[in-house]
Length: 76
Image (cartoon, rainbow, N blue to C red; front, side, top):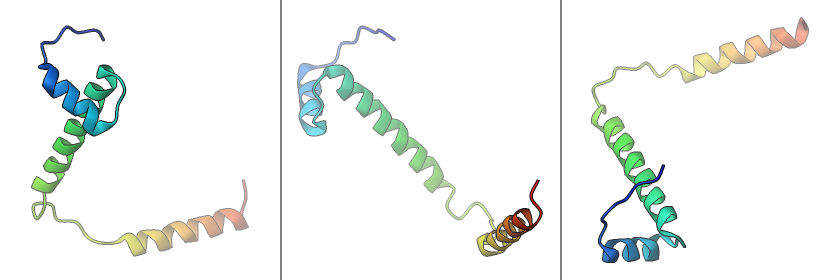
């Protein structure tokens, strides 16, 4: 998507230096990706202590391994 933006040159130059990108487009895309990633992390962190989950990964792994064994014994 093309867009015309009025971004101060100093901000773009600093972003390009810090990110090691070669073009303004690369720098802005990287900044947007990082912003989105941080917002997602913040959202997940805000759920800390609010979500009740049972830690049953070991049970799930046992079930999965048994299923694999059964599939190998009884193919197709």
